[in-house]
Amino acid sequence: MENLIDVLGRESTEYEALLQLSQRKTPIIAGGDLAELQKITDEEQELVSRIHNLDRQRAGVTADIADVLNRDVKELKLPNLITMLSARPAEQQALAEAHDRLQAAVRGLKRVNEQNSELLNSALEMVEFEMNLLQAAKTAPETANYNRGAYNAGDTMGVIDHGFDAKQ
Image (cartoon, rainbow, N blue to C red):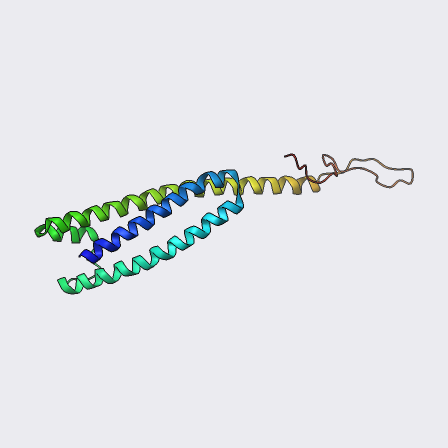
């Protein structure tokens, strides 16, 4: 049981670190700083890898507990295990606290990730709008101006042929 509480505690710490990274990422997404976003994404990948390893350890410890208790590992969820520990209040309390801490970190991470996802979708929509605007400008109709040889000498309407405006 101590191993499970220890693994849950370490897993909670990693999720809390991931939550802090995701919170740092929010203003970076809004500001469009791609280099800093890449750094944070790399750090997130390392944390996710550690969380994955801890999750495997937790599954192994839970399987061992299920063997000792002669229970099916699929039915041995943390809330059930907490209830089963009513005869051992100290372990029950420690497991309940570890479970609550992990749940709070995961809920916070989910909320921040949904917010970041909305920001990214808004940024993608803006890029798509700008791309459509550029494409529309390139296919704008020409003016009906002709030269002496009766050739079309019209300019494309609404398009200034200076390239991108660096000040925008």
